[in-house]
Length: 172
Ligand SMILES: CC(C)(COP(=O)(O)OP(=O)(O)OC[C@H]1O[C@@H](n2cnc3c(N)ncnc32)[C@H](O)[C@@H]1OP(=O)(O)O)[C@@H](O)C(=O)NCCC(=O)NCCS
Image (cartoon, rainbow, N blue to C red; front, side, top):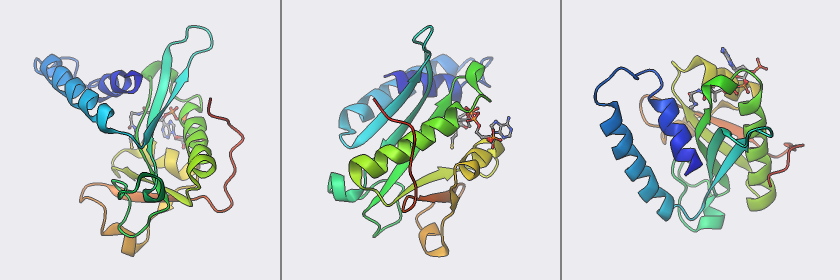
């Protein structure tokens, strides 16, 4: 649920003056809560402040098909050992301190260690320059032409190879 609240805050942070925001937040919260109960093979990673215990950042990582037994949303067809990252958000006041970079590093390490994933995919809007920079800094590269068929029209599909990846961060 921490992830849902974080996502809602981030999604609507630029639209605080819209009169439809509260209605949309309620609708989105119900939709996410329903989705959470069906998400048996996704894991939500949460970063909390040591001082206040407040949630600073979250992401969801979906298991590869080899673990879940069904195709992983967002992963190109036929690749059954890939994990998929979504809903990466860092609290507005905690940005620019390397938290997202650490979280993605931890998620990639978790996918490799726990699920023996060989790679991780993520989709990003090219207009989201900060997110684009983030994934490039973390070692993601644009997916191949073959893989691009799986992407929706507005977003780009990025891939991080885990063959020689090792994370120094443990997930607890
Ligand atoms: C994108 C987001 C998760 C980044 O979180 P963050 O904790 O501030 O990012 P980090 O401090 O770990 O920065 C990692 C990299 O991102 C890039 N980056 C971060 N802030 C940036 C900025 N203001 N401008 C340009 N690039 C930036 C840099 O490449 C940085 O690496 P560097 O410090 O080595 O240069 C955060 O801005 C956010 O929650 N945005 C709203 C939600 C969103 O867009 N999520 C991504 C959906 S695909």
